Length: 528
Image (cartoon, rainbow, N blue to C red; front, top):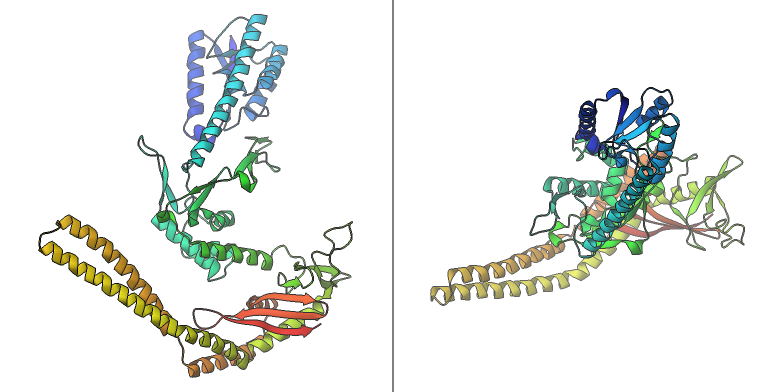
């Protein structure tokens, strides 16, 4: 009898491991044993059985109508399809072409109504059993997550997964080399204020490679920068699989149905708290990163039809909504984003639109004057120095208090040594107690050094005044020749521009030449 053979695997890993070849080999061996002549072989590598449209299966169905073979040999029913309805469709279609289906797992030469019903029941039971397994697996994972155990063996970048054993469940361990890269990524975002694209370029420049692939992708970096796992808490049940609106297809076929993810409601997430030694990024740093990501998003020049100098900076003084850019008759405007949000309901905000040609020069001139005004900057730095001076006495008191605690710990250590010399305690007990006291002493010494650094962080007034005047003179020469993009960089010192009625209030921070910034509060208040 002339036959065709058909094989299918559902995942790329099965394809790579050679499972498709083992299926074909088993089918060839069975065909030779039964005396069948193989006319052709059809295979679908990495295609889900829940899809009817598969390139290998479609070719087999087309060839069946041309009477190229009398039967199709398949390893088992689930290799043909995972749904009973698809089995029925394919079976009826092949019957019309006088082509039988033979399963290696249960070969039968009968084609009776009883055989048809038996096969149908078997396929329905198999489909039902698959759904039961999926449900049991889902409930088991939920229970495991609620018990505080890690789900999944693919850890976030910065960690490695230690597989479970008979005595211990699987857990994460810090990958020291990757953890340093994670810290570098957060540093580039927060302290260097680089965009995610610029971070990818910088990592490539300094030859730091991702875990997989040759180059960093912005999607990978976004995932790292938004992952709370680094702060000590990870989540399970955060996403749900769904069908992609733009499925990945191979030729005219897609390999699977649910290839996309969407977020579940937050109240369905299961938080899994990690041990302290797994924390790579502290919460304060993580929050600063999220703030910088939002700021980068506002100021990103990509996908912008027109150039707006104050994009993402203006806020409505009436309703606190951000102003958005818009054009009308080839003129650029800034409009309150809340004005038309409730359409066709009545407006919630009646803030007037502002011409870009009117507000942009006004803000730029105000910021330019602030940067060229040494007195304004000196006043703010001196106020900060005064606040530091007020803290000097408190800092000295704290240092003295720490010194007392260190002396007490030293006395305890000396007494323990005396007791050990008298033979009252063993060497192991001595080492245990001294180890704890020494740890407390080291922590106090670190805290003491921190306060000493604060006390020493004071610049001479003459040095400050000289440096500020030099800075202002340098800025004055440069401001007039800046390009549009360079002006946007300068305006990063502006944190907020509040527009109410005809008044514009500009608030910002000028980076000081110390480690901390000098807040200028309100740079200017003008009428427009």
